[in-house]
Length: 308
Image 1 (spheres, rainbow, N blue to C red):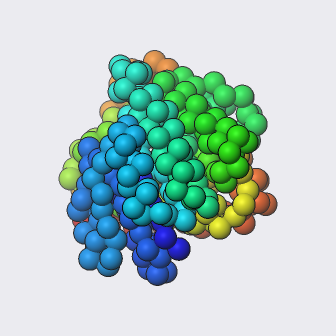
Image 2: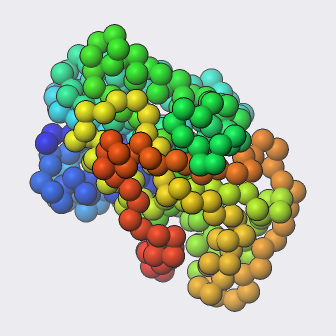
């Protein structure tokens, strides 16, 4: 298979690139290297992957790359993922997550792509869950522009399927964690807490710490992408574990691995933060034949090992 991975130098994308190379696929990565890191691709580039540095907002550059590569499958992971940045500058967020996605869809259509796998988000689209776990037909009620832009991008994927016959699917991730997630930047709470456990320090907990998320290991996300690429199913699919884990649960799980005391430091809750979130995975099991394999304890261990 000849594949193009947008955002392939990022945390999730680089793991996907490695997995495809291991099975013998031809892989081209498109990444602006604004948040993605070339060092994430060090092994991949040595194993035959190619990197094209471009911004998906540049429609001409995107079209030219697709014309040259002629990929069979596109995995679209390039995105603006910082929720706080989306609130501060929703136009920037939309320019990348909506207009950038349209550029990639258009180029995929024009170059004859067989399958388009779009990366989306579960918790940020559903907002405060009204059903537990939340199915794909749960009302969309984003609490930040990031979730709104991702939902809009999904809509364009579905539109290109209806209007042009392009085979698209959108994967709504839970809270992804694992090796290569930056513990010092705008990362997920697990990466931040793992970094603190190793370096020493007390984890910040906003509010009472009883907020729940559906934490899913990056290796399972990779397998969901590969299953989706091999399928003909369209529309949105939740990709998570289906288990609610609180912030305090994470603190408790990491405490035995910390260098010193690992006591939570409570700060005021952040306005607009979702309190409870978990995903219904029924559709992914039935139609993609996918389910998560890595439990939280094992995933935390792998993440800690990578950081040490």
